[in-house]
Length: 304
Ligand code: DON
Image (cartoon, rainbow, N blue to C red; front, side):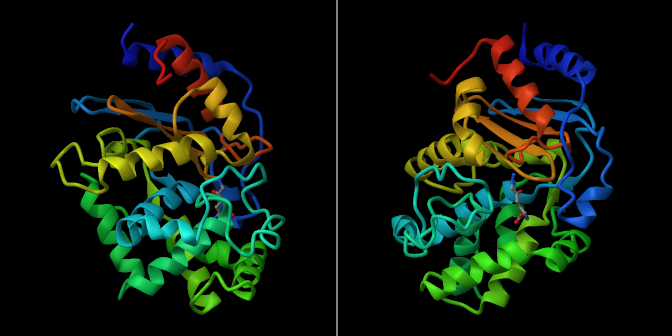
């Protein structure tokens, strides 16, 4: 069976299963999303692409965007970035405060909210126009140049972002935020508001399956070594305290967002994006996890 046939089969199977979980209603605007949306899109290093369901509809990629801001900060700072943010799985929820005090304000990894807030601070320190420059970086690696922030989503999150406000101020008090916390948070919320479809998301992330270069025009986004390291972090930290479970059941590096999206990467082969808005208790897409588990099981390929 080829990947497209596997996708069709698994999509049909998962569509029939009970759709369990909850929308990320702590962000008011995300509570209005149709919970039954379900889309998949695969893009390969050889240029093939295939989608099913709501694969062409834009959704809020939320924490998936943390990978993109990290890549830009890594490109700018090189290995010095790891002095500001760690590379260990936290074993805690995505918005946890608990480890920061003992860790002197150095977040365990760049994908928990604390880590992504520090990455946003780094970008502000190094870029003249952080929002525009990050967008230009993302557009440079995407065949679709229209990717943008969503003001409706970011202003919705800004009204209730108490936990992130606490995280940012706490890290500031520990010395690992260099800029004005309000400016850092404003940028962080905008980063989380980026919207993309499964189709665009899978194409955008192809550089991570292609040794750091875009597939459509061979532009170097990261070096080979940096790409290997980002994929290692995605495998160990991409799903918060469900990262071990995802590696165990799916066996691919990947990243989730509370908009219900997941991107998974098969290095040297393909990227696959899934969107289904209902989340499990760990904040990861319920159907997205189920789909990817069944997809790699049925396709019988593994990076291990
Ligand atoms: O900061 C937040 O809570 C959201 N903007 C992003 C969290 C998120 O996507 C976690 N991922 N599963």
